[in-house]
Image (cartoon, rainbow, N blue to C red; front, side, top):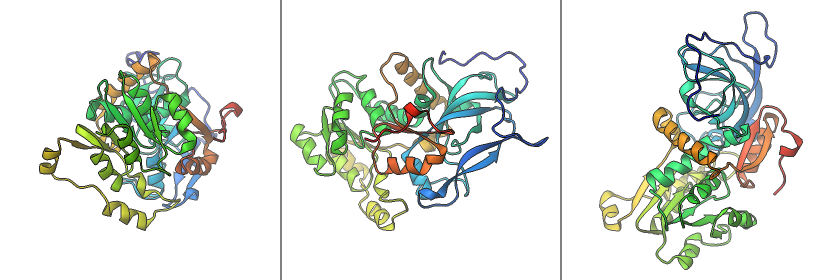
Length: 382
């Protein structure tokens, strides 16, 4: 399927679902569907499977039968109440998913029933059926699976904009990627490989180093047993050109001091806040106390840049994000990028899926699906 908008017949009225409802509804009621709902802030048990109803899509909206959803570190932070601009409890988490358009609202001219789409939103996508603005959807390229499509929006948009829009990555440069085996990390490695002779340093536990080397990381570093800054300096005494910093706290300061002249640190998360199932006030205090701070005069003298990136706060930048997705689809069609799926879990296994990711056992993307995954897609122990 082309990445260009799909043609729609003129004056097409809203079309009802081509698929049977998840659960039969009484006359006049919308059908029920299953959804993952955050019932309160805290541990894994706070996310529960519940039934919800969704009506017909409104003007400018699509109704999508969801086939796969992405699990992100931001969802873990949401569960603990560490994320800003959250809806009132209870609400459905989920920033990305993929599925098939089953109904089209009025005023939609570039999508039609049957289109396979991936969706990006702040929250609300961990459901079997979602109604979303058409501008938040992107047509899936031919040959892409629903699991791959659910793994692309958050991680690849983030990695692309950090490396190319902020980082201005060019041939013969070097990049330090933290959490290199995670979703953003694996996306960033693939994108770095699209530029000639980029040297990649990647932090991850030792058990993941062979996988990182196979994917293109020249220098895997075990952050649990080594000082990664010292290890980078041993190999590259002048430091690196770009540091991707999802950690925050004192690690942002370390990143800044690892930069070469004209280097850039792009901070895009505060993973150091996460130390267990629930919010840890001591970890929060330590992270904020050690948070890196610098003024404009100091930046001037250092010849370095500090950038901040938050995809969640660009939810209204539809044109900008669509441009990035089209570039990513082009790279996918060329075979230069391909989302790496670590494991697939059903909605009923959401607690195990979150635990798996929070304990950093994944190499690649963790995916949620409404129904139990096929046997061959089930999680394989690392």
